Structure formats: C-alpha cells, structure tokens
Image 1 (cartoon, one colour):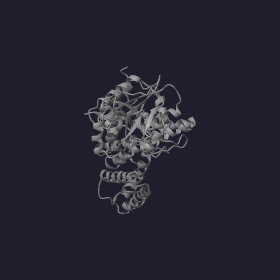
Image 2 (cartoon, helix red, strand yellow):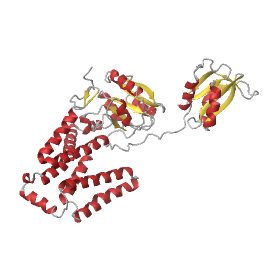
Image 3 (cartoon, one colour):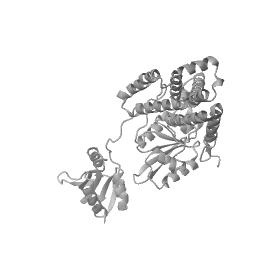
Image 4 (cartoon, helix red, strand yellow):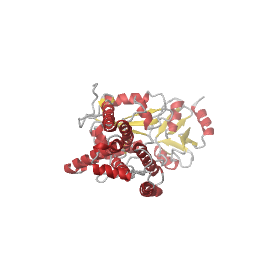
Length: 441
C-alpha cells in the first residue's frame, strides 16, 4: 500500500486529518497534516513564501521559488510518524517523493508563567512549561554560551521526547549517554517520573528519590554548573535533575542571592527543622511510653496531667494525630485553591481544639505535631519532604518498642540506609560541592 492510500485509510479514522491538493508548476501535490496540530491559516502564508502564482490568469498554477528543496523518498511509516509529530507533508504523486515542513503549530501549550510550586523572593519569576522546546529556549536565554549542548531521544508508542542539557567541560558526557541508552532500552512505556526511576535501574520502592525536579530555570542552570544532569520530558513542566544528594534537602540554588551570613543562618535553620521533623515525634513516644524517668519532674507531671483522660497509649495517640495531619495536608493539596485554605483552618484550629477538649489527645501532643508539621514545611523540594514524612514513622515505631534506645537505633538504621545509596557510582552522601563524577570513572 503506497503512502497516499495509507493517508486515505488514516483519514477515515481521523477526522482532523486534512488533505489538500495543489498544482505546482503543472504537477499535482498533496499537502497533508492534522488540523489539531497544524495552524493551517498561518501555515498557508508560509507556503506562499515557497510557492507563488506563475500566472494570475491560470488559477491553481504554482511554481517553487527555489528548485533546491529537500525532496526525499522516505518510507511511508516515517511520513506517517512525521504527521503525528505535527509536521506538514507535501507529497509528489508522480515521483513519489515528499517534502516535510515545520508548520505553524496550534497553540497547545500554556505561556510562560510565574512558578506555582516553588516560592522565590530574589530571582527570576519565570517557570518551565509542558513544552520541552520552550524550556530549552528558557535555558539558552539565561545561559548564552556555545558550551550549552542539547541531545534528544524519543521513547515508546507515545514517542515522548527526552531532551538532555549538557554544559561542555562540566557535565560528564559518558554518563549522559549511559542514561540515554537506558531510557531508549526500557521495554515499557515511560508515563511518569517513577518509570524513569525504574528505567535507570532504581527500585520503585526506594524511600529516597534519585531524581529531583525544579520549575525554575535559574535553579536548573545552577544544577548544570554543579555538574548534575538536567533533562526535560515532554508534557512535564519541570526540569528533572540527576542526581539528588543529601545537600539538596536543605540547600537550593536561589540561596546564593543572599549574603553569606544569611545563607548559613538559613542552612542552620533548615537543619534544625529537619531534626525536629524527623526526631520529635519519636522522642515524644519514647519519653512518655518507655523512659519517663528522663524527664524533669515538673515536665513529667505536666505531661501526665494533660494525658490523664486520654484512653490509649502514646503510640496510638501520636499515630492518630500524624494520620490526621497527613489527611489534612493531602486534602489541602488536592482540593481547589478556593477552599484548600478553609480546610487548613478547619483541620488545624477547630478540629485540633475539639480533639483536645474531648480528651482524645493531650495538649502537649498538639504542640509536638504542630512543630513537626511546620518544620517539615521548610525542607527543600516536595519529594524530600515526603521522604522525611515517611522516615519519621520508622523512628516512632522503634521508639515505641525500645524507648530512647530504639530512637537511637531507628536513627542509625536510617543513616546506614542513606549512606549506602549510590547513583551510577555517585554517592548520595557526598561532600564535594561541584562536579558530579562517577567513582567508576
């Protein structure tokens, strides 16, 4: 079956496929493209720069301005694929050759806007979109150098494009090629970031994410200068960054806009917040359940008085409150913005007060949970925040079983787990500031 017959069959199943016959220099040509992908009203004006009327009295007669057009004899499958990629195909029926044109596309993507998920005080206010080409343009506009290089690949039935940004002399090209080959060789469809984890050989059940993300071009450029690998996945409005390190939990590139004193103060504050979010719930359980003798007598009496009518042990009490906070947090994220703030107020104030007055939890626990929730909010990146939220449950369980000793054991278990993590030979806990280099190189 030749190409034009395949197009006729395709048109029967796709009503948005447009085929228009034109005559160029006495030869019949077909102009083919999807109306849902191609803006034909603008594209015809572009075709007019390639084609013009030879004789106004001979309607429908056209000739090329240049005779050196890139006509090729391509396989039908490649031409069909070009149509699905939003290209315009001009088909010569007599010679069975084609001309593939990049037309004016339909406006399928939103314009560049302010960041939604990352707050920034000092720095650029533009954010990435779902269009990877537009994202690459943002990167080039902020790093105008010949050292910036881009390589692309496509994967799966969706032909999803992956674009890798490299900084010559900084990015390790062999590692980029290795990651590119792993994505190309992945047998399943890559639909989400989780699938990239699996394609790169990481477990989808890992507690710590190996790929971080940012919607800020300035941050992506900073990661690039650090030697990290930055790439885009079509349809995903973030830059994906390999590899995540322990410093990414409390450091972000935009911090460099502040004076050094402010920066180190922020680092100290975030580290304190991480320790509070991770250790405080388990410490509460350990001291109340197993080791109350470690408390000062006045504090012990105060806590005992606040818990005297609570009908269950501290472990059940804190698990109920942690679960309730997780539900409120998830509801605030998923619900529309117009009511998410209301949910936060209802859940945080009204429900908290009611549950204390009903003697279902102690007032001290409300303070512990509030401090933990606030501290968890200062952690850089949503993925790192979720990781820390899960880790604290490990320490709470160990603390409930073995008290302070279990609290320390749980912390050591997590430290050992973190210390053994590597990404293609790059350790997660690494102290070099720049230059992601594989230990195997």
